[in-house]
Length: 358
Image (cartoon, rainbow, N blue to C red; front, top):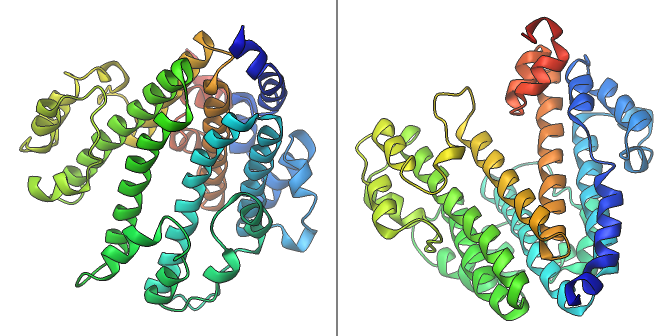
């Protein structure tokens, strides 16, 4: 009864928000469009994205601006949920916020390390970060070097791990990204135990622990398939948390001589049924499908819990990734079937190409 009372308002709000997420049929419609302005027009006329798209004038309708307002729609949803949260739930929302902070820092690092001529373009994030974040965007955008960027984060928890990397020799963008990822997952893994209690802690540990396992599987795969990395280097990039992956399984994956042998180890894991390497899906799509199954299953079994918040924000972020991918596909002239395959939607291929329904 406690959780029912604690989450009833949040769950009611989230259910109303989730009803506005895009359907497979709508994604199929979008995949059949011919230009990015057509996509914007469709979203404005047929979806809840009208609220943010209406802030753009006709001459502002291009991919970059559309992506910005889509991100703002995620921030709006975070804000709506936050307003319905009690104090303990707001502490949990701060854990979610850290993921957005890591993305922001990585963007800024990319700008200064690659010496991009374009200025920081973060005005559309400022109001949200000013309200919910420990990071000052106003400070970040003054940085012109990595040293300045790191120093501008001095009042935040990210300063220590970044300074440690900055003070080493021959540091790269990859090193900074890796340090931030490892810090994010290890620190939030510890903090969740202080913030969440009993059933909420058990649920979030299962969702977060599974995500960490799946990320490690994905990173090992990419290291072997695309970069031919040595086992010693692969170990350095893994999140040092094993949830349902034993140390022995991780060792066998890392030290597998090739991709085929790696895949044979994956089928020995608890996640095996989500990884069918013979189907026409990328590792990233299988990862997303597995998380989707885990999150929605947990929420279905525990509707009045932290899973309601965690699952909705996951679904929203996945929707934004798919929309960004669809815009890129349409921009480059891919046909609807190719576009559907890119976003992992075999069902979308059937919807948009009726002749293949057999």
